Amino acid sequence: MQQRIIGSDDGRRTVSALCLGAMWFGTKVDRATSEAILDRFVEAGGTFIDTADNYNQWVRDGGESETLLGSWMADRGNRDQLVISTKCGAKTTVPGDPSPENFEGLAAPTIRRAVGDSLRRLQIDRIDLYYAHIDDRATPIEETVGAMGGLVNDGTVASVGCSNHATWRLEQARNAAAALGVPAYSAIQQEYTYLWPRAVAGRAPVADPEMLDYLTVHEEVTLIAYSPLLSGSYGRAERPLPAHRGYAHPSAQARYQVLREVSADLDATPNQVALAWLLRHQPTVIPVFGASTVEQLDEALGALDVKLDDETAARLDVG
Image (tube, one colour):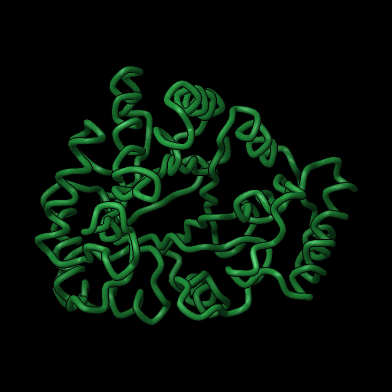
């Protein structure tokens, strides 16, 4: 599989160009299927797996994904061959009500407790990439980045990043880390896909043109793109482009039509072309995709064989 570099300094790691998202593992995706998907991903050369401490609190308690991933690694004995990322800050403080107002946030004591809980569930002694899952503006950013950077300094995690942060907050966090003399965020996990959304009040920030410009200048920060396949909307007729996330508008529909035309020309699926577009993206993007079956996984892996020449890529970009 193609490779990418994430992290900085001692936390730099080579990872597979596709990252497997494990959100539904252990809940909506049962154990046997989850393990089959994980086995197939590794067999195909995948090394980068993403989870979070609040997956999947929408249907159960949260932490089930980490727990399943931990037991799978222990059973396979393959931890050293993998790069594991997880997150803190968005676990609910009110069981059964994972509303954003109930998120535990990013105070230093919360981060220290959360990382210990994740290590226990994952059955590992070090996390490769640890994210601040949401932007907690009620906590001083110096407190958050000081605690996150401290985890790198004490060897608990290899590198740190953030997710669902605006560009100016990423820059503010990196400046605060520099002032404190601790490792800064070297990755940002943000929603990003082939289609551009319109702004939707109250939704988490996406990787917009401003962020892409920032990352072009700051090559030491890697964009990890979640929801690159729009939860199946590209390939499943029963899942229209999600209006509540800003994707159901005329220019998105026109761009989507170009995606479908290119897919037909290349004898590939829209999902595969959307991933292939991200794989050749500048600045560098690592897509985090989910799979509920081995067949869905194999479709995504097929994106690695889709070759977009300059003319086709330009056609997609203009679309």
